Length: 635
Image (tube, rainbow, N blue to C red; front, side, top):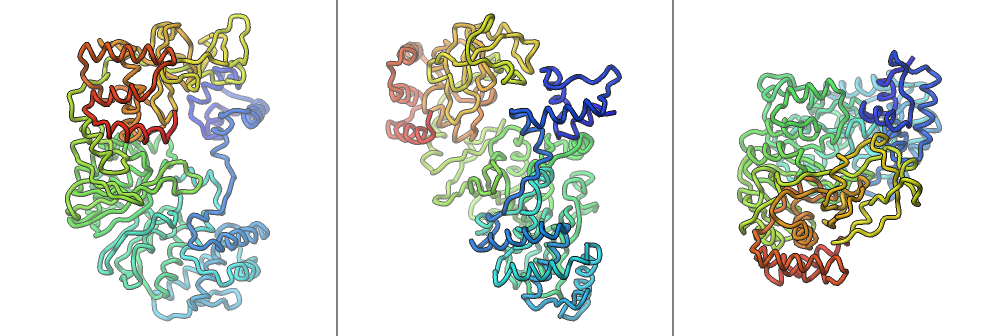
């Protein structure tokens, strides 16, 4: 007998998702005693696996067995072919991951004359107690694997590797063997080559990577002159730590070294905010460097534990916990280098960690790398934090072509959102928008969400039928107008997964695209229904609806949205936080005229941009710059 909890574990979804599947009749309810029979459970699995919708994608993410070559972690184009050959050998012999990696490790160590294979034993060529420990480490690895296949596997991999010279071939093969679901669950993706430059660590400095993986980021940032005894590498992944130990030997071309490589949990190993790595007085380091896990999956109990341990963070996001702990490991002159998703700069849920690193370091740099991680949607930054003043106090944003100083006065205390700007000129525009007297819609709107049917294939119709009515999608909303929709719905709220209060749909309201790189709004006076790609709000402020629509459709507002909020989802808090200029009656009258022209299709958007830009005190040159910058993103 199975329960709803078994469905959650099987498909990797939340209790709310299971309940929505039941509510929308995608799957049956359990019996009155809360159980499914084994046959019913198998039928449900078949339903989800064959369901042609996003539900299938969500349900199968946890079970995703897709693999791909991580050529983003390779230095040479030819090396991808080598990785592919190694994986083919691995699959041909059906050996465990560890034996394949050990065989590759021995091949690489042998190329540097650090080991040799003698019968069923791996011999280390250097002497000393450290080398003896390294020999023991390799042979224990061998004995705990399927050693009967080792010799043949080793010979095939040796042929595949040939003369290739690659910095972290072991780590790349490991990542390429792992499935998407395995990497997603741990939030662990090894650091691509293109983001590793520009970090300078001196040979005498004490350095730690608390989420080291294969050791790739740490080793790429030091020189062979560094004392291995000053290097600390920690992780929870035992296979990655084995690779890390081999990579250290390859980097220093020696097995007679003593780096501190340990299995330790940087997230749950702390019992409170002053006790890290299960020690009452945490060690301090000159440098903390890491690509911590992003979005690691935690159980309900683990989340409760994190909320209890880190109340200041108000989140269980794995990278935020790691960053919080890492800052506490820095000595008074220390510095930190962390790879993070760009969303840490602007998303509201990351406000607490932004506040923490701003308040506990004296200068900050943000290096923007875009979509640097293969098969990871999030854009990537490197966050450099300095406990001392490096160059000058404050915040800088750096990309391929520029370095931009971000003044703290444009970081609002309530959000501390860091603008993603391209140059100092854009900083000045944003400053001007903040500088003038302005208001906002904060607390002055009633918001409503579009309908989530839970099963569009069943509920969304391509043509009108008896009792149906039109329903608008986000793409049906264009600036100032709502194009007649191509879809219809029989509106029975009780059948849908999510519905706003019905009376809100029937009121005069402002509708907007939910997912969009530009702010796009239109006034609805017909009581129309919306799908969840379109949301709406009903202002309670004194401003006419038409004036609000005109302001938000300007390129000036979209520029602010793109640079400050850095989002492709227009959220309620964005709409409430836009700084809206204070308006005289003549301004209101002019904006009403512009809205009328917009609804009639007679409006040149540049008229709106020029007038709205003037309300913020922007120059004609700045308004033209905004128009060109925004147009690159399209409507």
